Length: 198
Length: 198
Image (tube, rainbow over all chains, first blue to last red; front, top):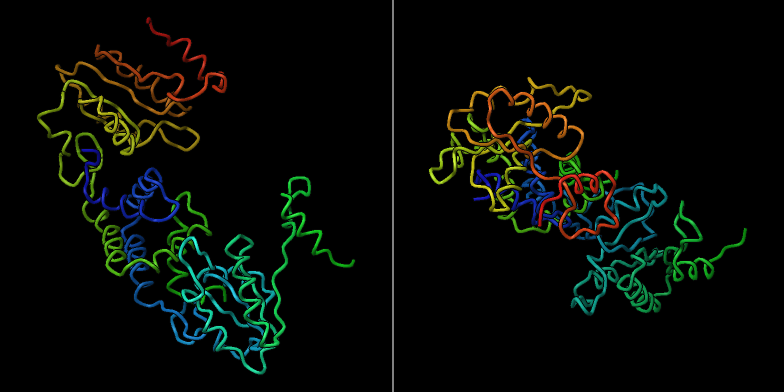
């Protein structure tokens, strides 16, 4: 018998099933929990079920929320004429962190990936089209710069064309703080193509 | 507001306080929990508090256990004449995984580290000495090969000398699967010193 405690073993297994957490890390985390104060562990335990009980998806933008529609969709301070399309709720957090965007969001729930069997019907594409109104001024496609994100960007670009709404995509280029010398060719190509006047 | 859900924010914070988990990973884990089935999340939540409620330390070897004395200390199949001294409960698991050791353990609860204020009184050293009996044939010091582990090994070696019990330490040398070319000097020095006849 490897573990002298079944409870520890069960907790290790629970941690190990999470993405990016291997068995050794799971073991270290379980031992950490063992040393945490009882009330902190109880708070952690409650936070887990609370997420399942309280969090749902906004029926307008499909971001996660506790009230429907979500606080962004129902806010009067946001510019309702601009919609930023992203893949996942995490991407909304990333964009919000910039404090540069004051419009609304639309969370697709993923990106097109024929290999993984993700087709337009699996994403909230239909729901995006039905959100478009006469006063929609711009749709920003903020999808990941990988194969799936590019495919989704091109697909949505084509789909949105007949609506005659300004459709943009976020810039691809050298990340801030990086070194031109170490940039890969694809990124440098995009950076050159996307050059802007000084 | 970054998070549109307070529950998610609380769970992210809970994950982020764990060792080796940064804020981005915590966010990814929280989103994963959101997608897990309700009953799996409930099991995870229960596993956390169960560890706090059920796990304590064996009063003989100070390993974690749910019954006191632990299953190893109370086993009739183990060789009670050999005691393997380790730093943490995780080390017991590591040694058990080898299936090479059939003796008992003694978990010190750390290693000597004057800088961190860990002195012999903070470790289960006194308890180790009081466990020694006439039939104790060998004490294996299986501490980590770092400064703290070395210091603890030397300290215990000196302390155990008057007892006239065979005291050994686990070998330091090249790890299996590694490349001699890339071995650091300290390791290679130990490997040469510890050479054994073919």
